Length: 104
Image (cartoon, rainbow, N blue to C red):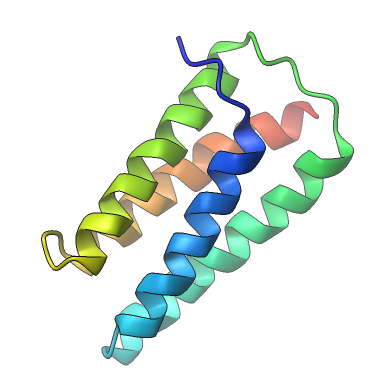
């Protein structure tokens, strides 16, 4: 199980999404990436004020989801992964983070 703090992972995903957005030319994909960025930012705001139980399965799954999303984004930036996959992966991670934020 992961013991990584969720905050730095969440910020990495947001920063990586912004980097990918700078390289994305498709307007529809750009809009979807921006929606994901906003969703993660909203969840980050809730997490900042909350007290989290870092031993829960939901917390660990959220951190792992964020780590996988960052890896997928970095692959997309390098041209090794489709932006569409980033959008799907980010949506899954946002759902996991949302569960943790709801517990805060």
